[in-house]
Length: 252
Ligand SMILES: Nc1ncnc2c1ncn2[C@@H]1O[C@H](COP(=O)(O)OP(=O)(O)OP(=O)(O)O)[C@@H](O)[C@H]1O
Ligand SMILES: [Mg+2]
Image (tube, rainbow, N blue to C red; front, top):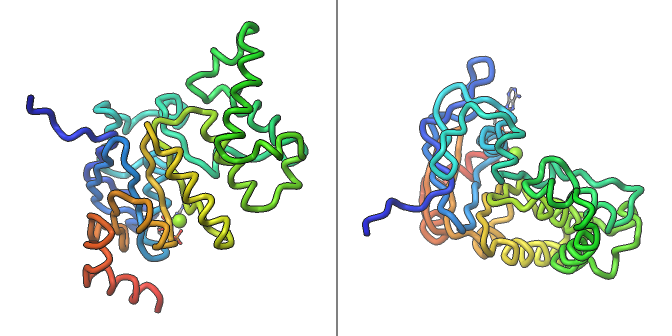
């Protein structure tokens, strides 16, 4: 059999202009199914804008996006979320006065999730509690389940955001700087968690911490000034003189 490469995302000629300024410019980018794909680049490179195009929070000025082979360029954010494209740290706000477990329960019953109808039915309310516990165990928050979310240490809040995102059963999970603001112990814990939840799903992440990128990413795309500068495995990309130059130039 001669199957084409199994890409979950295929972006072609993707461009987003703000008042004539191209924040994302003619980007071609494939994300391989079940990979961890990192998007890196200097501040202002267009990484978050690219995410917003994939989740449809922004409409592209030009170009197309295919998801599982379907053209989703004109679809609404709600529709692509139902398809399984879920961005963490944005949709999954934490309700501080609720307990940790209640936050996960609410996420499971959220209308965005593909499994929404399932969790609404009376017969599954017992299963719902089980699923809450499963998700809390998966992110290491079992011991915190009945604490208020507001009282969680910062790194654990991020783990809770993970649980509420996982509740939506994303097929493609987008993480925008998942380790930002964390101390080194929490960075390690979240990196382990990303590795763990990457089983059977695809992860596209923007990450400034290059040791996390080196450890996790199968493929890295470097953006600079809205364009793809380089792409490949960490060893290749990090040795690329254009990438080094863009990073040094970006610090000025
Ligand atoms: N809504 C907007 N209106 C106008 N300009 C915007 C808008 N959003 C982003 N930009 C500009 O587009 C460029 C890319 O921004 P973006 O946030 O995508 O960069 P980034 O790679 O995520 O940077 P960072 O690493 O700092 O998060 C920047 O120059 C930014 O000022
Ligand atoms: Mg950004």
